[in-house]
Image (cartoon, rainbow, N blue to C red):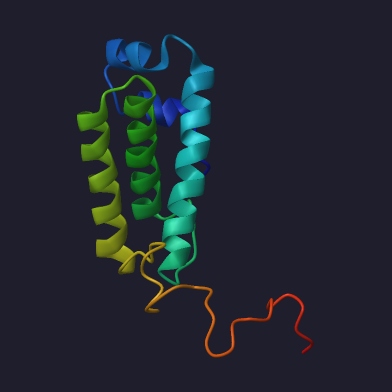
Length: 125
């Protein structure tokens, strides 16, 4: 069953939800969509599949959606807490998240080894 705005509403007192969304459910929809994409990418980076039927995936999406909501209204410290909770949940269930600086390579991605006087784009292969 796909997560909905109602699921997100159930995570917060009504007054907090209204404050965080500025009274607009469209804000919650956008935050939930962003959360789903982010969680999907992080889970796939661990080599596992994203399955919204999985209880842990659902909880991670809700935590990330809360992060998005708190960020939306500038509550950075609360947002950071939710982001850390989300990452910890994913890593404890699925393993380490591959981040952009975890490529396992040393040095620059592009460089010149040897004769660099020739434009590499003009070399023939």
